[in-house]
Image (spheres, rainbow, N blue to C red):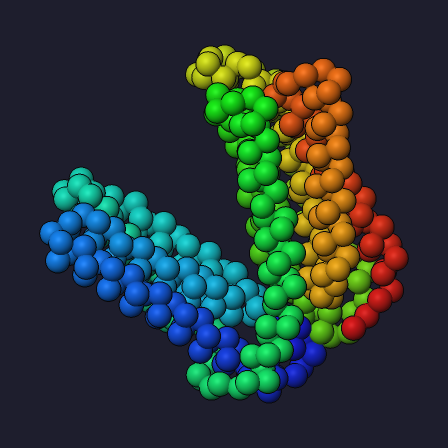
Length: 350
């Protein structure tokens, strides 16, 4: 809602929502922090010092994840301050590297020290450069609005988010734990592509939402924000896929010979990852807040994936590559739904 309202130039409403969100995220993170500290103190009194230290780290990282990552850093994205976000990431990355020395010196407790130091550095710089100063002011109506908008989005996101868990469960059920261990390498191939699609999404999503608030059409938003980065990254990955297809067998046979059974499945996952790059256009559902159609899109992809998986299993029996092939069908179905939705809503505005 924040980038949308900024695009709409409704600054007063934007600040109300940001203020309520700050109170909510700060309160929840602080509550969980103190609950974790109490548990940590309990184990400390039991003289279980490592458990106490570990839970203290969890307390700090929970607070960081909720307040810093899911509130402060959202302000940067909304204001397109990606250079500052990148700088913070570099500083945190450097601190992570240097603080490995504490692990060398103090072992487990050094690991805990390192984690807490990273949290403090992340918080310090995220606060220092934040692009928007928001007061803590509660507004009941704003909170209701956020819950009304956020709940369907949250539910649909989590339904789709459970799909990888279902995939891994099916692999274990049909092929056992060894099959899952082998297929982990294929999942790593797909994950490499997701880094790039996730980067595009993080940068373009708030800008798309701002454009929607400004009254631009769906077509203008897609052309203005996604066409160029997708063309660039698709060109690059067409070359990488060609090379990867030949490199995967060489690398696995040379360095991971025990994973030779998953070579073909990993090669097919290159295609899965490539199709997955285009799924970033599905952000348009969140931009215009059409969660019903978004749920249909995800549902169609998951159902088509499951159908193809069952058909291949019944016809040819178990194989690792059947999971890669069925993912191609699932991702393609999602992509077709996205393209059809965009075509139907090309001229739609807020």
